[in-house]
Length: 85
Image (cartoon, rainbow, N blue to C red; front, side, top):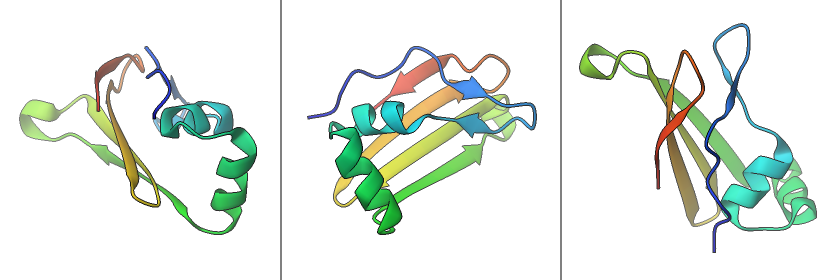
């Protein structure tokens, strides 16, 4: 079962999402050591998509590990999470 979704994520100076390993492990509902092992093994993937048109100003962060997927839609300017699934 997934952990709590964050209210906000960090957006770095380049406009990219910065999510800590601890936060990612929590989102996926797994212990940090299991997350790090899977990350090293190439079993964890993330994709950040920038919204266009009516979705301009939003980012969609998708985090995948094995059969588990979590998605956060974020305001690009503030890092505020506006949708989580």
